[in-house]
Image (cartoon, rainbow, N blue to C red; front, side):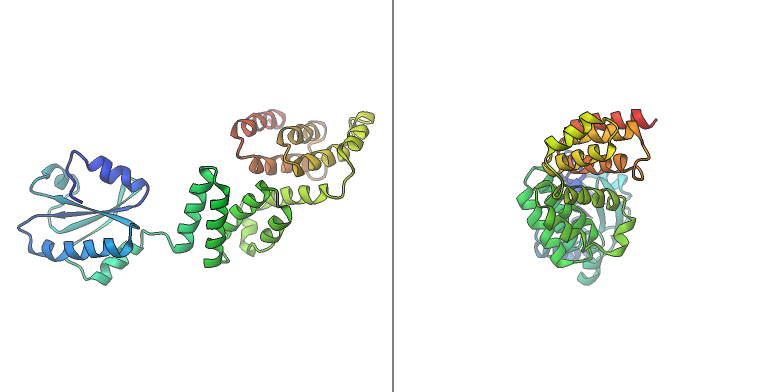
Amino acid sequence: MDVTLANFEREVIHASREVLVLVDFWAPWCGPCRTLTPTLEKLERDYAGRFKLVKVNVDENPELAAHFQARSIPLVVAIVNERPVDKFTGAQPEGQIRAFIDRFLPLPHEEEHQQALAAAQAGDMETAEKHLRAALVLDATYDEARFDYVEVLIATGRPEDAKAQFALLTPKAKADPRYEPMETALNAVDQAQDLPDEDEIIKRIEANPNDLQARLELANKRIARRAWGPAMDELLEIVARDRTFQEEIGRKTLIAVFGMASAQPELVSQYRRKLSTLLF
């Protein structure tokens, strides 16, 4: 499509937040432009929406030409996330242009992951899960997607499936800041299955408020049924009474719950502040 100064911000800058935009600076009198533009248009069709092509007539839009220093045309500028990231001049062979474009496009498994994140953001966990599975079929070592898949499985009440997926993370995943909180969360859910009823645990706490093991068990039971607030209350109490209990299990489990309860950001923020008050 042709763009001018009037619609450049909408069609290029804003659009580049969602997709790679190629800006083709050309002029009717430019011979190489007449060679390059059809190639770019063909590639836009071939890539089927994975990038957007816009054309700027430098004779009609001298301000844009000056801004992008289009002293020699054809000039093609790649825009990503509102910023020019690279450019080339002159009529290039199709293969070189494809290589130029591919540098700024996500790989297929990354595209599936991005679609999963968008679906999760919209609250469509079923679609998010579908795209995460697709991403992992394309690349089974893609830990970023597997972390998110585990979170979806936890959030939808499938701890056994979550544990199975967590076990498939690559060794390098242990360096990821999400690894330890996720492991803690899964352990909490796992341990809850073998614990007595909450009423029995509560009686132990009433008899001895300093029974931190009982408080941890009660928190784990509540985590398993996704009662985030009551679970975090018990974990905060553990931190307040003995921060070092079981190698800071209260704080570590709280951080894990923050991740599991991310769909309730106000609740998480409230308990983050409470934890910060206790620690600092």
